Length: 435
Image (cartoon, rainbow, N blue to C red):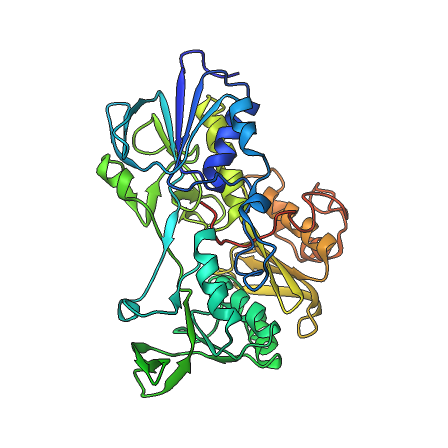
């Protein structure tokens, strides 16, 4: 039940995390004042499949709203869009319009901004992709034709590359690392995705260190340290996001590569919580702090933080998961792979018909599937039960690995097809624009 002493809860950020938190507060029975404040002009409870659908015109603000604008008023949620919170002091929010709003609890869901590169400043036809406002200019450039140069071979960069290449554009991808998707997939699967792009005619170059971007004869020219050049009409910089921690830092909260929170989502000020892309939380599976840039994770974490603001006292331990669609191939991904020491695969990786389970120190830590949604749901369910489960010791067996990959019952958890969440979220999206 909600704490009766709470009268006003404010949420800063109208992206997926902020909107989800506000809705959860009402759903959980909080009948006090809820303020939802953000610089965006429309709150989002769904994630835009920006990088997947960049060349399509079906993407509109209305498509991203799971609730009509009147629903916020009907729920008694005071929505203040186009408003920037400039300061936090003594239980009061200071706003760009001069307003001062008191709160008893505060959730920061400030998200982040796309990282850019210093040598790209001042050039036309150079884009980043973080929110819906980034789409029109980039799409207009793509519709005028290629070549397109994508800097960064993460999920966003590769999804845009696949979308553009499927529309017939000439596409080149440059990656500073030795392989694409190093933080997202294990080695064999990274190689398979790389070959998928090359098979569709997208040129992907790794180990590229760019030093400048210039304009020559009407084209943008990217130059690497080793002297190689690439020419393009349009450039997309897809090198990750920078968490928006300025407001939290100004308020004296503990920050790092994000706003530091505990397992309940609380910051160093017990009245203030944080969730979504900006939250640096203790991940029980990793045994260290992590910050996840995935919209579905932002939804889960924001809902958990909202409940904990009302006194639930339940640690957040959900395993992050996402999906990516490239050239009609869908990969579903859950967990972490950085510490994995082995990978068990059933199926055909090259043909993108497989389920794979990553193991670290004898425990499942990550799962990937292509063309096998039922297997993925079973694997993801198992990952959610690994840490802290009474059956944790039982999961340290080769037989369980086999069971997890075949959907059989394992370690007290019935891993049946149809268990868990839908195969593909209705609104789509990977980590882009989680909020």
